[in-house]
Image (cartoon, rainbow, N blue to C red; front, side):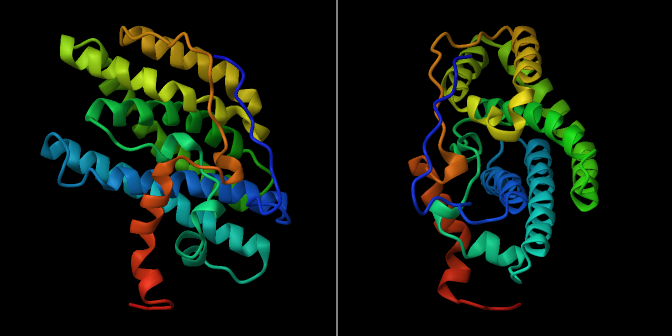
Length: 252
C-alpha cells in the first residue's frame, strides 16, 4: 500500500479549536454513524431475508456505538451538546468520518468488501481503546469489541464465499476490492498509525483466502478526518437529517 495523501487543514476545518479528546471521540462516532446509515439502506433490499436481518443488526450495533461516543464527547466537551446535536445538527463539512464508510453500497460484494476492510480496522481499534485511560471510552470499546467479533466473522466469511465462489461473484468482489482499496490508507493516520502493518497482514491473509488480489495502484485518497469528503456524504447527511432540519427541536 502506498503512503496515503494527507490533506491540509485550512481555517474552518472541523476539529480546530476542539479538545483533541473530543475530536478523537467524534472521529470514531462519525465512522459508526455514517456506516450505520449506509447499512440501513439494505433493509428490505438485501439478497435474502437472513441477510436483511443480519445487516440490519450490524447497522444497529454501529448506531449504538455512535450514540455512546457522541454522548461521551458531549460530556467531555462540557458545552451541553447532545448526541442528537452531533448527529443531526452538524453540516457535511463538520463530519470527520473516514471516506471508506461513506462510499455507496453498490452491489452486495461491494458492501461486504467495505465492511471487511472496516471490521479489520475496528478489531485493532477496539482492542486498543479497551485499555484506554478514559474508563468510559474503555467501556464503550470493550462492548464494541464483542460486537465487532461477529461483524468480522460475518464479513470475512462472506468475502471468502464471494471471492472463491462463482466466476461472477469473484469478478464482482475483485472489482469492489479494486474500487475501495484507495480509501484504506486513511485509517492509519493520526493515532491509529501503528495499526497499519497488522491491518495489512490480516487483509492480505483474508484476500488470499478469498482468491482476491491487492490492487497494484499505490494511490490513497484521504480527507475525511478534516472534513473533505466525497460527493456521496452530502446526500447521505441530507437524508439522515431531513426531519430535524425541517422541524428543528422536535420531540417524540
